[in-house]
Image 1 (cartoon, rainbow, N blue to C red):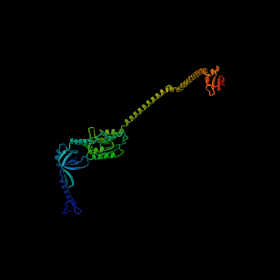
Image 2 (image 1 turned 30 degrees about the vertical axis):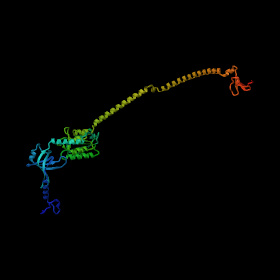
Image 3 (image 1 turned 180 degrees about the vertical axis):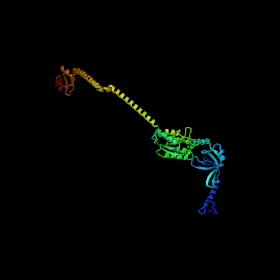
Image 4 (image 1 turned 180 degrees about the horizontal axis):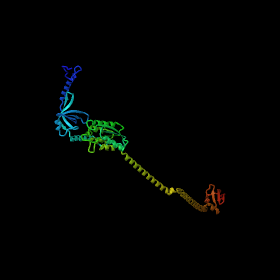
Amino acid sequence: METTELPDKALDTTAEHPWPVRHLSRKIADYVAKMPPVWVEGQVLNLKRWNQMVFLTLRDTDVDMSLGVTLSTAMIDGAATKIEEGSHVVVHARPEFWLKNGSLRMRGDELRPVGVGELLARIEHLRGVLAAEGLFDLDRKTPLPFLPTLVGLVCAQQGDAEHDVVTNARARWPEVAFEIRRVTVQGARAVPEVTAAIAELDADPRVDVIVVARGGGSFEDLLAFSNETLVRAAAACRTPLVSAIGHEKDAPLLDLVADLRASTPTDAGKRIVPDVTEERARLAQARTRIRTAVTHLVERERTLVNALRSRPVLAAPETLVTERAEDLARWRVSAGRALVTALERAGSDVVRLAAQVRALSPQATLDRGYAVVQVAAGTVVRAPDEVREGDPLRVRVARGEFAATRIR
């Protein structure tokens, strides 16, 4: 029901006095019409021609967002390079609100394709920024585990990358298991889906290594893997990450931040697990080397023991006791002879000394008839004046002694 008077402002509307849809649409169209034109960049999708107009969707290359754009066919046909699905362009356009269906589109008046050279320059600039932050430094890279029990694989929903990684890995180590996340690997949804898959696998404690694989493609197809958001997500990943995006000539920034760059998905399948055949051969070689080393050691020790046993001290150990017994007997005989000789010599000395003692003894003098006169105190009398008349004396002769008194 149409009213004659409508509220001037949106704040004045009520349930009893609302705005009709057409009135609100005109308000929005007037507001949008006041917006100035803007240069906007994106990737071309849903390119359609109708009469002299071109309708396309311009989508963001980082997130899943898009805008409709209307252009004249002359802008598309007059572009420096061919504009087709997937082309990167910059459009000068003004927002336009379509009253009939209430949609917002951009009406463009100028279009410029973004060339490969400019995209490369942007990637090089981002490479310099990330390198300055140290995201490509070798000391940040984590070595892959020798034998992962579970491999996380981020790959396309359809394609050969999954087959190449899984088949080659299991050909080398049949027991390896995979946790696979199939995502969009090009286009608007590539960056958020790949980023989310990496984060999900990194959060799983069972996953030992993550492989991001894609089987190559054009430069534009691989732009998502040089996206700053995705590259920083890979740099923040704590699980060792392998980049297997393209071929040798392809070099997205993800290769530089990954812990290991594989040239192809096939190469990634070969490098994430060891070759069971090679490991068995190495094990056999190691066992042979150990057996040889132990055999040589035993033979060397056996030779040493035989050499020690052949020595006299071990061949006839009683020789030590026999030789010492003979030495002891010889020393006893020598000691006996030395003792007899010493006693005989000492006996001769005693006889000689006894003769000398007897010759020099006062007894010998007494035996010749001499006597020794002593006073009562025992002093030997050597002169007559040493004794007075009447003093008692003691006279000692060869066979005894007797008392005497001096008379005068």
